[in-house]
Structure formats: C-alpha cells, structure tokens
Image 1 (cartoon, rainbow, N blue to C red):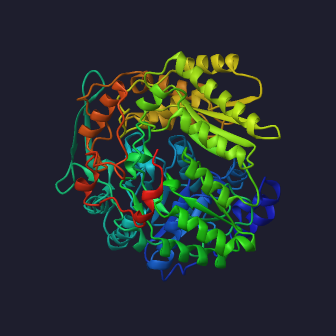
Image 2: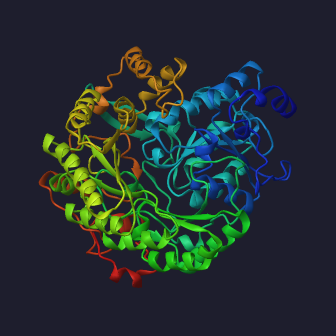
Image 3: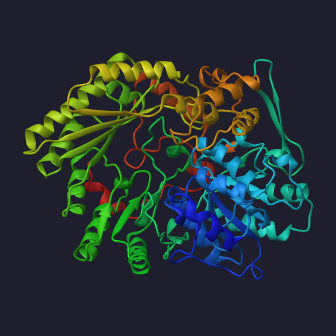
Length: 619
C-alpha cells in the first residue's frame, strides 16, 4: 500500500506532506511486542490536528509510559479522499501505514460538534461500520473524548465508548482493560469497561421520552453499570505526563511552536463558557516544572517560540516570573514567548511588552459584550474603562493593531448592546489615533453565542439564523469607517447549537446528513445548510426543539448523567443572577462560590505560585 500511495496518489493531491508521516521525533513501536494498539484519530486536517496539545500529550503518554501503542491519523482533504476511494486504499496511520481496522481501538478527539460528519467519513474510509450496533467482535472499539464528549448523546450511535475527563488520568487504565478483555465478546468487554470511573458506554443504557419530546427516564440495562458517570481529573499537574520531544511537522501547522500548559481550568466563571465548567478546578504547574519543560522542548525541537497555553494564561499566578525567566534565558537566542488573548488590565500590557520587545504584533483583547449591563449578565468582570486603559498602554508602547472579540445573540441582548460593541470599537480606534503616530488597525471578531451543556445558559433560547443575520446587517450599516468587522457564520452556529444540546435521537440526523455528502462542516466552503435541514426533515425531527425552546428548570437534560462536579443548583443560581445582572467573583480572589467542584470531586483549586498573585490587579 505504501509504495502505491507514494507513487500513484500523493503526487496528485494538495499538500501531500499531510499523509507521509516520518516526522522528527515520531515514535514507532514494535507491533508484535505492544499490547493494546490504538489509533488516535483527529477529525480534521493534519495541520489542525497536529496543533492540538491534547493529542501530543496522549501520544507521548501511551508510547513512552506503557506497553501499549498509539499511532496517528487525520481526516484527508477531499482530493485525497477521492483518490483513496478510487484506489481502494483504506484510512491508515502515519507511523506504520497500518489500516485503522487492524487496531484494537480507534479513538477520536471531539473538540467541536461539527466535526462529527468527518468522524463518520473517516470510519467509512477505514472500512469500519459507522454504526456501533453493526460492529462485530473483530472490529476495533471506537472511542471518543474531549470537551464535546461532555454531552455524548447526539453521537451515541457511532461510538462504543466515551472517555470523560482528563485523558492522562484515564486512557492507560482503559487500554489495560482493552488488553485484558480481548478474548471476551464485544458486549462483555463493554460491560467491563463501564465499571471504570469516567467511562461511558451508551449501548448499556435505555432512554424513554415524554410525549412532548423531553426525557422521561434514563436507566442502565445491566447491574454494575453506573447511573452517573463522573469525569476523571488529574489532581496535580506537576506529576502528569507532558511531552519533552513533541513531533515536529515538515509543513506549517496552525500552532507551530513549543507549548507550555501552565495550568488547566478557569475559575473566572463566565456564564457562557463550557470549558470554564468542564475543566474545573484550576490546577497550576509549578515554575520549576515549567522551566524544565521549556528547556527540554527547545533542546529537542529547535523551535524559536514558546506558547504559554491555558484557558486563561494571564491568570497563572507565576506568569510574571515565568515570562521574565523565558525572555532572559532564551531571548538572546531569538526565541520568543507567545501569549494568548490578554486580560484587560495594565498588568497584561506590561507583560505583553516584555515578551514582544523585538516586534509588536496584533494585541488581542476579549470584552465579549458591548455594554456593561450585558457584561454583567455574562459575568465578564471587565469595564469599558479597563479596556480603554489597556489599549492606551498598548498604543503608547508602540502597538498599532488591536483585535477585539465579541459575541452577539447573548441572553437579554438588545439593540443598545449591539451599538455598544460599535461604540467601544470606535473608542479603541480613537484612542489609538491619539497615541500612535502611524495609522492604527482595529478589528472586531464577532461570534454567534451558542448555548452549551453544563453552563448557566443551558436553559436559554438560541437566536435563529435570521435574527443573527439581522444583527449582522444592522451592525454593518452602523459601523464607522476604518473599523473592520468579521462575523462567524450564522447558519453554522444553528447546527452547532442543535448538536450541542441534543439527545441520541439526533444520531439519525447526523447519519443522514453524512450520507448526503456533509463533511468538513467546520469549514465554511464545505458547510451545506440545505443538507442539514433536509436531514432533520427526513428524520421528522424539529431542529427548533433543540435551539428555539426555553427549557424548564426541572427538565431532565440528555447530559445530566455526566458528573462534572459542578452542581445543577449552582448553575441555576448563576442563571438567576444573570437575569438580575449580578456578578459572581472569582473564587481565587474572593470566597468559595459554592459550585461544588472541590467537594464533589475531591480535587481542590491548586495555585502553585500563589505568592505572586497579590500584586496583580484583579479584573
């Protein structure tokens, strides 16, 4: 297969390097000597999948710390897929060019709801039955993890097993069970796996519905199968595996640099944020561990940039000392430090100036909403004054480009809130013109709010695509000259919203959409709204039931059986506070907010370098 691939196919497709493997620091383990064999499958193209830090962690963990084997595969671009189907070449892994159907496990990383059609396409291209109920004992176990797996029900038809929580804490235990049960029939294996905390096997449960379509009950079919599945959490990141020799691609990828995961979780409590709930509590790595990881990664890769990664990097309590150490230690070698979007305060700008002494790139800030009223609703503890002070400091320091992130379609939003976005962007531009000698560039990226499971807004109605389009047109008419606005695709958000809060009845819709040609739905040039609408209609399922319906406070949700540690009572309280415009403080600064995570999971907030935190100005 490999010879045919390199001779007859790769010369005729775009970016053939996506499919060749052989990168620096690749790990090839002996197939015969390895126990469980797993293919890690990322349902998007190589350059996106290779930028995902989670995949790098699991790749090194399995291959370096166990007797199991893990190899990689990614979604082929349509031109490559067409050639593979013509030549009857099944989807394979980059390490050994082994077809996926020969592995014990194929594990998908679900980072975004709309990649699900790529999952189905990859399974079909691999010659593996797309529907779990059609797989035999000889087929691989199909698994999934990642943030989307915290509402696994819309995808239940396609996966044998879901892994809920931190993969480093769970994956090796799961692979041990795969190896130990390989002589059992498939159903018995799945029942054994369901006994592992953090494992969800959808085929072992039965769901009943009321006449109005809401869930009546959800019960296990067998003894020993848990009613609730509690997420797995690494209690101390200093003892968690992190790769010192990540794979170096031969092509440019989205995030092509060394990465330090400084902490996991975020306690700011933005009410729209799914990740802020499912990744709680905050756990930091110590400075000494991060310094060592930086040293080894740079030594083993030759990268010229280090990115500090987390949901809220500037909240890492040792960030000032870490950045100054990295700049002092590696700056003279031309190695830079990259920060994500910044907190809106002067401290962030001072730190940004420290890491970008050589070159000023675009400054990124995320006010999220245009009015203070709406920022209070979503618990975004940021004021307009802080935004202006931050950009003043930036422009005075030599920055000449600012990017601002906002959302439209938030609960309680009015036309005044849309005008507030335009007013704030205009004030930022005027501030730049006042302090910068050159022309300044101000861009606003505007996403559509999508209500997500496990958040205080899981009950609310989502804006229709028409409403979002009306808001977009209104803002484009009202915007000032010199301001650039970019909007997320409204129709994509509609399907995302249905899948994000859907139940297992949507499996039929997804399957139908894929059969009608849907794939790469997260790419605007391939997204086909008409095919999704047709799929809902063909399955006699009303999309509005999932997007346009205000849910009652006592409704049973499809995802309620997933225990994130955050209590439903807390989420209800946060929703009620949102309607009143009441703020909830960050529990690192104020008292415990009562979310339930520390007591519920027995894993507490961990601030390794908390001595630094006192001098920061909290927002």
